[in-house]
Amino acid sequence: MGLTSDDTELGMMLPLRSGPSIAEYQQTLVEEFGEAVFENIPAMLCSERSAEGLGDAVIFSADSNDSGAHFYFDGCESESLLFRLKGVLAREDYKKALIFVELGDFIFMFFSDLKYLFEGRYYFDVPRMIYRRASRRAKRVRLEGAITLRKAGGAEMVGQLHDFSPSGASFYAPRDSYKPGDNVLAEFTIADCGTCETVVTVVRVQEEGAPAGQCLVGIRMSLTRDQKKRAEHLYLCKKAEEIQKRPEYSRNTRIF
Image (cartoon, rainbow, N blue to C red; front, side, top):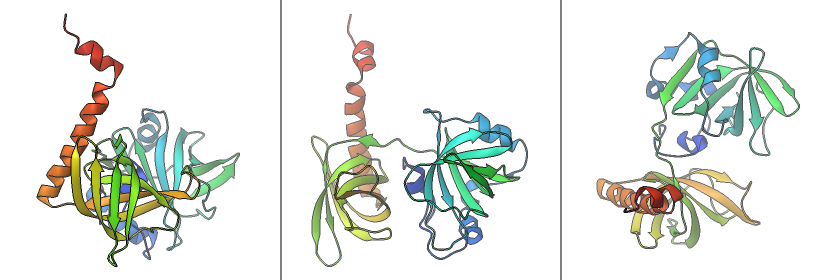
């Protein structure tokens, strides 16, 4: 499994890590990132900014059982890279860590060591080598819709969609309903746009920010050519609806 190109959250773009060392995990992704970069690394990392002024980051420790923790990348200070925890759980044994940072239109991958933790910020060494690739992601659209999920044993559940793109989506479900790596058959039903049925893989389960007793489940789709066309139709249908609701749309399409 490699990085997908159309997921919004960085964590959902990464393949599951279960067992390999961070060096082995990094090697599975090197080809997708291209050549290594050795020069102007501080300028590259510190000058790139996301639209919100913060980068999305995922940090893996050397522990082979660590599936990664979500962070904000807060930029650079005194020859250090600063990260702030995004969730509620993280490790402090980042003596050797593999870090992914998404800034603007790029994703960066590199090894680094934790220098110290101060006032909620993790200070890491500036790496001597990084890999960079274009994110080429399609923004997910927030929507109201239903997703029907059927497990291999026949159990069926209807969830509430949170967002959607042509290759990934997320939905709310009762806690402990799914775990990363689960494969289920999913049918998306979006009002005024249509339906799409495909096999999906659970890539992330997040309790933080979800309603009480619920979790936010992130999935990646396995699409045939026809299914991809249907998924793209649903996405473009909702995207067009989203654009038409923007104030600038009514101004720009006004007939004089």
